[in-house]
Image (cartoon, rainbow, N blue to C red):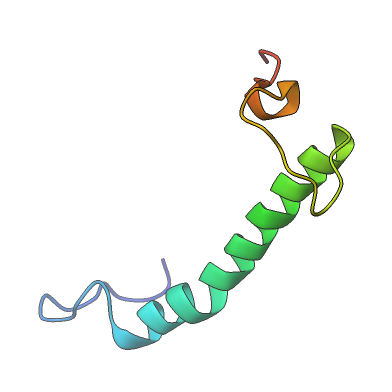
Length: 66
């Protein structure tokens, strides 16, 4: 609220914002999502490199309702 509004000619998505979103925040979010995915699998008894069949209960399991 301390800054004046942007001018009408200024773009909403500029280069610094796009670079920050795609080259900095994007990889951090991707790494966090992969870590959470592997953590949940590990808690279910899966080990790295183990084949997980489509009929495996861990593969088909749904989270409990909140």
